[in-house]
Image (cartoon, rainbow over all chains, first blue to last red; front, top):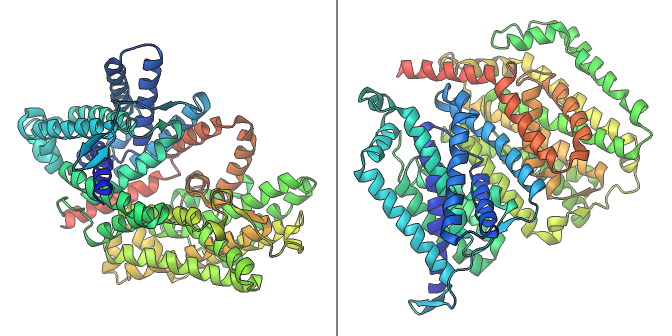
Length: 285
Length: 342
């Protein structure tokens, strides 16, 4: 049981970080990015190619994260431009449809060009014991990286001027504009950050299980569910929802088998939406 | 096929917000449907020699059915149902399992399976309406239903055949597996669905649908029970999806998760509808026929076909003025009106 819960937390932390990238973009700009999983896959492939080219691990990871961020920036400058002209629900709907199209373009291209591409990082050697449970070194390194990232996000959004500006836009875009915060600039920054986070999740995930070319859709779906349960636009919501759903998923998978556990996860998400549409920690409108 | 979009229908789709529709004489409307169906009925003369091409044609007709169902749900009342494939799959898998594993007669199993998808669609809509979920949340809840359905298909492998799908024995030695008759069976469905959709548009349903889409608040104030009409639309549309899915699997003789997959059905239906102009009676036919042809041409391209789909989706929603944009504009107006009101 303890082992399951620990595994669930490892998985849940990654879910949380995954959802953070999606939820920030939605909270800030009302854009639902369905090509999110494909960005993670691009980052994973770039890391894998950089390693093949003989670069040191850290440099390869850095290049991968930058590639993820770059895709976010390109999206901001291209297909999201017409999206910004709309508002409220039409904006979300158009962003959803356009990024869905983009996800097909990216995935089709990647599978055509690199059908066997995958990233699998081996970290450390033997298992490390935690609470009497032997854990894989990869899981622990992945979780530490994820926790550190959450900590830096917390500091960023709590204490830096830019982070506070982003939060002020999520709270009240008009008000932020009045104190001369430029939503467009912040959106560019957050799309870059979101791409970097997607890349980071791909990297940490690959320390536990391989991330291959076909993983995009399931990454997006998991991110979407955790985002919705945690509350759209809430980073702390994404963090807690990630851990809760991760633990539910792993524990249920062990006791009742994996397809029922997936359905339970989905039902939990649907119930959250129905009972509390704003999500666990979202602010009801 | 696009010849069938007479200037009259084109003008109508351009001014779909106005209430010009419904004033057309009933005979013109029947004539238009008949003409479209007759044209489609000629297809076997051209492709009838090839078993493969007839299979493609039957699938095309099934997609027309799906798109009409989705058009009634999304086009008429703005409920983003991202579970078109799953609802059709409830019909398809349900009917096949009832007939094969429980030995029910084919017609009974089709009726029961259609009933099941009708109830599920109605329930999804009822829940969404009661909790007043917006377009996006309705989309996410129905997407979750799609994912659960997929997980069930894989999990209940002994009945569904899991990932590989299964063959259907019921109806094996009947005309349903011949080369040409299935086409006319599906065409009959298309005719029925078009007729029902057309009649709906001219009834009080049509007035309510147009009113609630143009301005939900005003419709509510005018005494239209918006919630009720939304659920009605979902019930009718889901019944069409389930029925089309059930009939289709019996003509096909096999099914797999991809027969009703999200990428294979929902995305395609959305593109077809956007291409043929949402809310328009004949839009689904124009979209489905064009798309089926394009798809056949692209089949050589393999994985690049997915790239082409993606580009098509992006271009359609960005550039096609008659596609989604009028709806988006109408919603924007609706929202600004609502914001002014509050």
